[in-house]
Amino acid sequence: MIGMRLAQAKAGFFDRAAVMNATSRAERKVLSRFGAFVRQRARTSMKRRKDPAPPGQPPSAHVGLLRQHLYFAWDGQRRSVVIGPVLLNQKRGNVPPLLEYGGPTVLVRWGQARRITIAPRPYMAPAFAAEQKSLPPLWRNSIR
Image 1 (cartoon, one colour):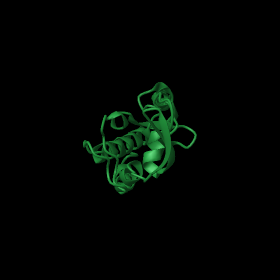
Image 2 (tube, one colour):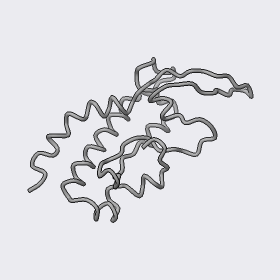
Image 3 (cartoon, helix red, strand yellow):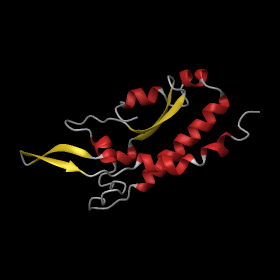
Image 4 (cartoon, helix red, strand yellow):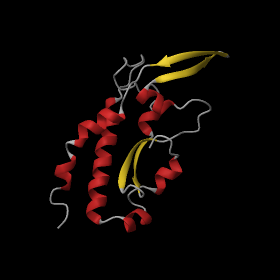
């Protein structure tokens, strides 16, 4: 979902008519639940604290914008669920993938720019991996 705007994500919400027409009831139910589980695990992994999270740990939720803007939506081309943060109206940088994967960026403070490298603080991949084991039981007995 990284790179998707909120309006694009909303079009893929599971209660929209287009999504309901494109999916079966069982498929919609299973993928919607799985998306909700992964999103919730990613949200709860981000702790509220003042200090930055140590590298390798999920990021800190200083303001809470990243936690608030995690969504899941239907991807019609792949017939799957897409889970992750949406792009906000930010002036520079692309914070969600930078936190997930790490990498170089330019930090501007008090009018001075300097190049820094951010260590990865993954939050979506660990949430997906932890919830992936719950996917087969969700499909069990879903089609009757």
